[in-house]
Amino acid sequence: MLPDRFRTPATARALTSPSAIVLAGAGAAAAILGGLPLVGAAAVGAACWAGRVAMSLPRRRDGDDIRPGAVRQPWRGFVQDALAAQSRFERTVRRMRPGPLRDRLHDVGTRLHEGVRECWRIACQGDVLEGAYDQLDVQSIEAELRELEREHDGAHGDDDHRASVERAIDAVRSQLASAKRISEVAAATTDKLRVIDAQLDEAVARAVELSVQANEVGDFNPLGADVDSLVAELEALRQGLEETGGAARGTAT
Image (cartoon, rainbow, N blue to C red; front, side, top):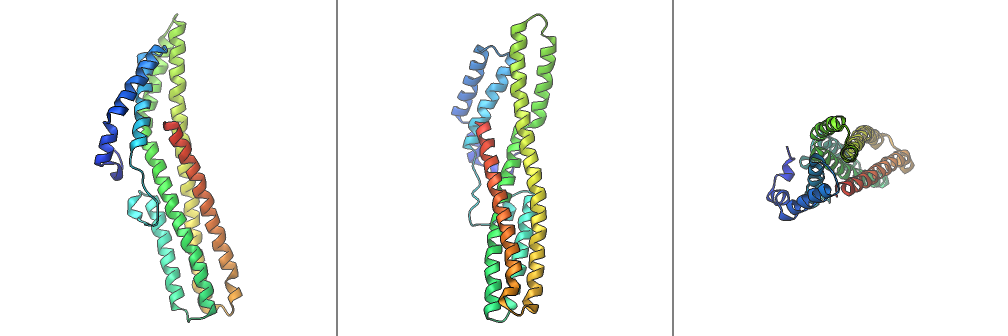
């Protein structure tokens, strides 16, 4: 089932657009002329259609509006946890007396806010990756591979046919490899984001402690350095996801 954000009139138009249908037919015809069996030609046609539809699907904008409900679990929970940590930090700053100590903690909070924004962007990218994985329909691809392998095993004495089936098998295995890479990246990102969320909570707890114990501005420097490190890690994670997403879109087209 498609995610809610894809069940829109724009998605319906993308799925049934004449250009997608024509491209699918052209791809299948070209595959048949190139010597692929009907099963392989159908796979090529479907891939062409899917690529054209993917280019037309509505894309989420991950701008300034943080909306946890716009992404699925576990990404939603990560964003909600980060927002909750930010809220606790802001309450801690507001409780402090005006002065240099409060100003310094406020500066740290500004950096933490940037980290929350990065967490939201990562959640958006992760959600899109999982959506791409769902669209690949791995179970159907695996079933197609088994059918092609049976056809290959039964193609006795016809070298040209066996060779064409082998090319189709290679193409289907490539799709499965892409799906595996997407799944692994999403899983690794989930693990990293879970750890960073816990570290954000730890930073907020230290901020609460320092807000009542700090005697000078320098007491906040280790906390500021740790928050800077967390934000840098989030930025690197987001950039890596963007590169993976670009590669996935390139494969789809």
